[in-house]
Image (cartoon, rainbow, N blue to C red; front, top):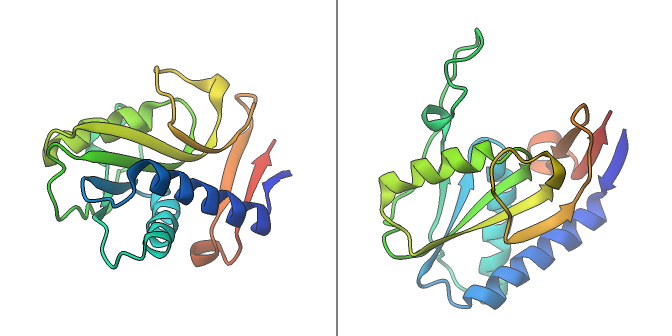
Length: 176
């Protein structure tokens, strides 16, 4: 096991990502932030909070998207898929969407998320933010717009993101 980001490095990375969003979207009037269930919401919760603090705005349109029924592997295996809550109480019609997930691996989760987004309107554009980009394992032509860290991994390795709110620590590790 190798630590990719410790607590302090993760905090600095989150601050940088939030500042990049504010730099590109300033007032967030025509921009929404959407976290992908289940693991992307820990990152998106933090980013949405940081953006509010940086901009001084009390409200930013922020939602959570479940992609369970849009996945291309929904009917594979013996496990029953239990959906999480989708919480998007606004239209994304003609707005910029910042889609957030923790780790970009094959790109299939992002494809499913983009399919699911269409149920909420047709966005002006979609940008992708990920904490970790495993760039050499892509199956689909998906590239992030905002990246915390790029990691070259072997297919047998896993990236695990720990969040204080869920795991009692903030850390990103590479597991062999």
